Image 1 (tube, rainbow over the protein chains, first blue to last red):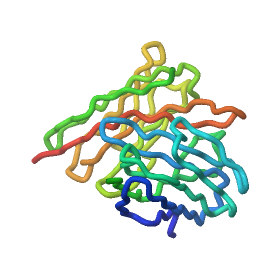
Image 2: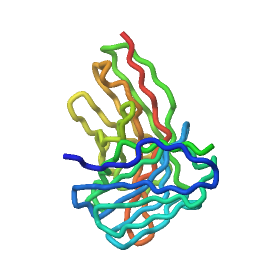
Image 3: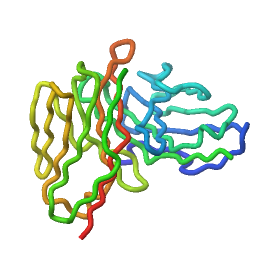
Length: 114
Length: 114
């Protein structure tokens, strides 16, 4: 089973460039999330989606946009990358957010902005 | 505000017990979680405890919850080299709309040496 797949796994950008990270899940999960992981800090929620066609802001949404046009895909976009967005990005999905809250994570996408 | 704190490093000898500690702030959290992250991988749910429990045991893992002090711990008995990883404590917190989100600590890096 593929689970949660993120592409690309690595990317180097110059300041001001744009890019999109793709997250795909094959578990028919309703909920999907984008987190960023920085050294010495916990995972911080960027945006999340509670179903196809819906998105909402998390703790640190500035500088990012998302779309959930298909249930299985959740895209994270950076319109004008900044060095502060250098991080490891994790996508996660869950069946529901109202019970035990188990999140299934992708392997991460390491982004460097020069 | 919501915050989860844990120490950043722990080093133990193979065969000893490991105890990873965590403090949290949201007293309304329904569930508290331990996730494990192995090198180059996403996080995986290790175990969780419902907030009305004091202890949960699962093979080599023991979770202790002290709600009064908002303290959570994870004990790994007979620690093995394969247990070397980063362990994240997380609490559930309500998003607008009644959905849950997870607040993660910064992670404790467990190093197991012979």
